[in-house]
Image (cartoon, rainbow, N blue to C red):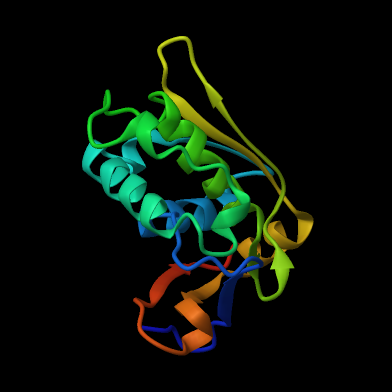
Length: 170
Protein backbone atom coordinates (compact mmCIF):
# COMPACT_ATOMS: atom_id res chain seq x y z
CA UNK A 1 0.00 0.00 0.00
CA UNK A 2 1.29 3.43 -0.91
CA UNK A 3 0.07 6.66 0.58
CA UNK A 4 -1.29 9.39 -1.66
CA UNK A 5 1.27 12.10 -2.43
CA UNK A 6 4.08 10.13 -0.75
CA UNK A 7 7.22 9.65 -2.82
CA UNK A 8 8.05 6.11 -3.89
CA UNK A 9 11.63 5.36 -2.80
CA UNK A 10 13.63 2.77 -4.74
CA UNK A 11 15.98 0.59 -2.68
CA UNK A 12 18.98 -0.85 -4.50
CA UNK A 13 22.30 -2.44 -3.60
CA UNK A 14 25.54 -1.60 -5.43
CA UNK A 15 26.87 -5.13 -5.69
CA UNK A 16 24.79 -7.73 -7.46
CA UNK A 17 24.88 -10.64 -5.02
CA UNK A 18 22.90 -13.77 -5.92
CA UNK A 19 20.98 -13.31 -2.63
CA UNK A 20 20.50 -10.74 0.09
CA UNK A 21 21.77 -11.57 3.59
CA UNK A 22 19.95 -8.60 5.15
CA UNK A 23 16.67 -9.83 6.72
CA UNK A 24 13.56 -7.79 5.86
CA UNK A 25 13.10 -6.71 9.48
CA UNK A 26 16.67 -5.48 9.63
CA UNK A 27 16.35 -3.59 6.35
CA UNK A 28 13.21 -1.90 7.64
CA UNK A 29 14.99 -1.02 10.89
CA UNK A 30 18.08 0.53 9.25
CA UNK A 31 15.84 2.58 6.98
CA UNK A 32 13.42 3.83 9.65
CA UNK A 33 16.07 4.56 12.28
CA UNK A 34 17.59 7.31 10.12
CA UNK A 35 14.80 9.52 11.47
CA UNK A 36 16.20 9.17 15.00
CA UNK A 37 19.64 10.62 14.43
CA UNK A 38 22.83 10.57 12.37
CA UNK A 39 24.15 7.33 13.91
CA UNK A 40 22.80 3.82 14.21
CA UNK A 41 23.58 1.25 16.87
CA UNK A 42 21.63 -1.93 16.17
CA UNK A 43 21.74 -5.25 18.02
CA UNK A 44 22.32 -7.96 15.40
CA UNK A 45 21.67 -11.19 17.30
CA UNK A 46 17.88 -10.83 17.29
CA UNK A 47 17.88 -10.67 13.46
CA UNK A 48 19.93 -13.85 13.13
CA UNK A 49 18.41 -16.76 15.09
CA UNK A 50 20.40 -20.03 15.06
CA UNK A 51 18.29 -21.64 12.33
CA UNK A 52 18.85 -18.64 10.03
CA UNK A 53 22.60 -18.74 10.66
CA UNK A 54 22.65 -22.45 9.75
CA UNK A 55 20.65 -21.79 6.60
CA UNK A 56 22.87 -18.86 5.55
CA UNK A 57 26.00 -20.92 6.11
CA UNK A 58 24.61 -23.61 3.81
CA UNK A 59 23.67 -21.04 1.17
CA UNK A 60 27.15 -19.49 1.36
CA UNK A 61 28.79 -22.90 1.03
CA UNK A 62 26.72 -23.82 -2.02
CA UNK A 63 27.32 -20.46 -3.72
CA UNK A 64 30.89 -19.77 -2.64
CA UNK A 65 32.34 -20.11 -6.15
CA UNK A 66 29.87 -17.69 -7.74
CA UNK A 67 30.80 -14.07 -8.26
CA UNK A 68 30.89 -11.89 -6.21
CA UNK A 69 31.10 -14.47 -3.40
CA UNK A 70 34.22 -16.01 -4.94
CA UNK A 71 36.12 -12.95 -3.71
CA UNK A 72 35.23 -13.67 -0.08
CA UNK A 73 37.02 -16.36 1.94
CA UNK A 74 34.15 -18.62 3.04
CA UNK A 75 35.13 -21.30 5.52
CA UNK A 76 32.76 -24.21 5.09
CA UNK A 77 33.96 -26.48 7.87
CA UNK A 78 34.40 -23.88 10.61
CA UNK A 79 30.77 -23.16 11.41
CA UNK A 80 28.57 -25.85 9.95
CA UNK A 81 25.17 -26.77 11.32
CA UNK A 82 26.19 -26.75 15.00
CA UNK A 83 27.09 -23.52 16.71
CA UNK A 84 26.42 -21.55 19.84
CA UNK A 85 23.44 -19.67 18.40
CA UNK A 86 25.17 -16.31 18.21
CA UNK A 87 26.07 -14.59 14.97
CA UNK A 88 29.51 -14.06 16.53
CA UNK A 89 30.13 -17.77 17.07
CA UNK A 90 33.41 -18.76 15.48
CA UNK A 91 33.52 -18.54 11.74
CA UNK A 92 29.86 -17.65 11.40
CA UNK A 93 30.95 -14.08 12.01
CA UNK A 94 33.83 -14.50 9.58
CA UNK A 95 31.45 -15.63 6.84
CA UNK A 96 28.22 -13.74 7.39
CA UNK A 97 29.22 -10.38 8.90
CA UNK A 98 31.70 -9.26 6.22
CA UNK A 99 29.15 -10.03 3.49
CA UNK A 100 26.39 -8.35 5.48
CA UNK A 101 28.52 -5.21 5.87
CA UNK A 102 29.40 -5.26 2.17
CA UNK A 103 25.75 -5.48 1.22
CA UNK A 104 24.65 -2.78 3.68
CA UNK A 105 27.59 -0.63 2.59
CA UNK A 106 26.14 -0.67 -0.92
CA UNK A 107 22.60 0.19 0.20
CA UNK A 108 21.22 3.03 -1.88
CA UNK A 109 17.83 4.66 -1.78
CA UNK A 110 16.89 6.79 -4.76
CA UNK A 111 20.52 6.34 -5.89
CA UNK A 112 21.79 7.96 -2.68
CA UNK A 113 24.27 6.04 -0.56
CA UNK A 114 22.64 5.29 2.81
CA UNK A 115 25.69 4.91 5.09
CA UNK A 116 28.99 6.80 5.25
CA UNK A 117 30.52 4.36 7.77
CA UNK A 118 29.71 0.78 8.85
CA UNK A 119 31.27 -1.70 11.23
CA UNK A 120 30.22 -4.30 13.73
CA UNK A 121 31.23 -4.54 17.34
CA UNK A 122 30.92 -7.10 20.06
CA UNK A 123 30.34 -6.55 23.78
CA UNK A 124 32.13 -8.50 26.49
CA UNK A 125 28.93 -10.56 26.74
CA UNK A 126 29.41 -11.54 23.06
CA UNK A 127 26.44 -9.52 21.84
CA UNK A 128 26.90 -8.21 18.31
CA UNK A 129 26.05 -4.68 17.22
CA UNK A 130 26.03 -2.85 13.92
CA UNK A 131 27.44 0.66 14.20
CA UNK A 132 26.75 2.99 11.28
CA UNK A 133 26.68 6.63 10.30
CA UNK A 134 23.96 7.81 7.90
CA UNK A 135 24.83 10.06 4.99
CA UNK A 136 23.28 13.54 4.88
CA UNK A 137 21.27 12.39 1.85
CA UNK A 138 19.86 9.48 3.88
CA UNK A 139 18.83 11.83 6.66
CA UNK A 140 17.07 14.10 4.16
CA UNK A 141 15.23 11.17 2.55
CA UNK A 142 14.27 9.98 6.04
CA UNK A 143 12.83 13.40 6.90
CA UNK A 144 10.83 13.45 3.65
CA UNK A 145 9.49 9.93 4.29
CA UNK A 146 7.73 7.87 1.66
CA UNK A 147 7.13 4.29 0.64
CA UNK A 148 10.37 2.35 0.30
CA UNK A 149 10.41 -0.53 -2.19
CA UNK A 150 12.98 -3.20 -2.97
CA UNK A 151 12.56 -5.50 -5.95
CA UNK A 152 15.30 -8.14 -6.23
CA UNK A 153 17.02 -8.17 -9.63
CA UNK A 154 15.52 -4.76 -10.50
CA UNK A 155 12.04 -6.22 -10.70
CA UNK A 156 13.03 -9.02 -13.11
CA UNK A 157 12.72 -12.68 -12.24
CA UNK A 158 11.50 -14.17 -9.02
CA UNK A 159 11.98 -12.72 -5.61
CA UNK A 160 10.02 -11.12 -2.85
CA UNK A 161 9.30 -7.40 -2.93
CA UNK A 162 10.19 -5.55 0.25
CA UNK A 163 8.10 -2.56 1.30
CA UNK A 164 8.18 -0.19 4.27
CA UNK A 165 6.77 3.27 4.93
CA UNK A 166 8.04 6.33 6.82
CA UNK A 167 5.93 9.33 7.72
CA UNK A 168 7.26 12.74 6.76
CA UNK A 169 8.89 14.61 9.65
CA UNK A 170 7.76 18.22 9.81
